[in-house]
Length: 356
Image 1 (tube, one colour):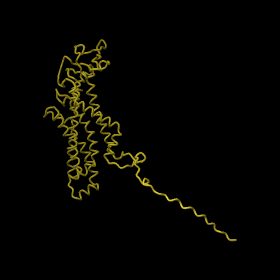
Image 2 (cartoon, one colour):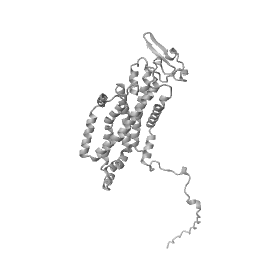
Image 3 (tube, rainbow, N blue to C red):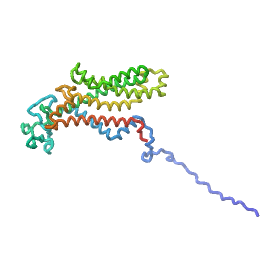
Image 4 (cartoon, rainbow, N blue to C red):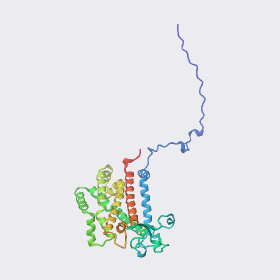
């Protein structure tokens, strides 16, 4: 018996589809288009900015530095007093601020401790100076502490600016040149830096004061001699890591000069480390100036700095503690802000912390 093959019935042909013009249009609604932001290409500086903005501590520090800089510029001109003006009839007045005195704070009252107990003293009422206001109080010579604090902050910010210039010019160039040429040149330059760094900064400043007068110029000269050592070591270490890289060898093969390679090829690749070290060096310079002024080797009278203000208020700390609070607070906030800003920049420039 033969089996028959069953042939399937022919299927009907599908209907012909007619394409329309709108079938091949680009999607214009951006909401429905998904972009993988984790792997999206972006520039190095945009990536640095993104990481820096995400660091809230660094942003707060930057805002504090801007605010302190503003008051250092405009603060001494916000009232009628001069930083060197003395008025012995209004000495040791407690802080008094218009408007706030009605709330029971900053009203000029001061609690004094005597042998018979404590009592509240108001120097404004005692001297009948009802229209007089000292926002931070007055010192033992009747000088306005508000004006003197912000005038002293100008000195500290000036020292910070000078320190930045010294590090970016002398320290950076010294380290880059030493690391690039190497050999005998590097050995001689590093021995000089080690000898310079071995002498304490206070000793150098004291020796300079025996020849020069105390003042801003003497402190600047001290920073010129000693401040650039740390920056030079960072720049030299980065140069030693990069000078044998392929892009440097290619530039040298194409006939590029040493200065071109140092400042055009290597420097742009280490600018992150340079800026970070620069920010870390500024608090050190500010503290150095404050310490020298505190021990009497810094800014001379009638000029003032935060260190000299702390030194003057230290003698009356037990009787009038409000006099020492403003300069200490401004100095602490300024140094802490620069350190937090430097830490945020270090995290932003470090490629190992790049988010994936």
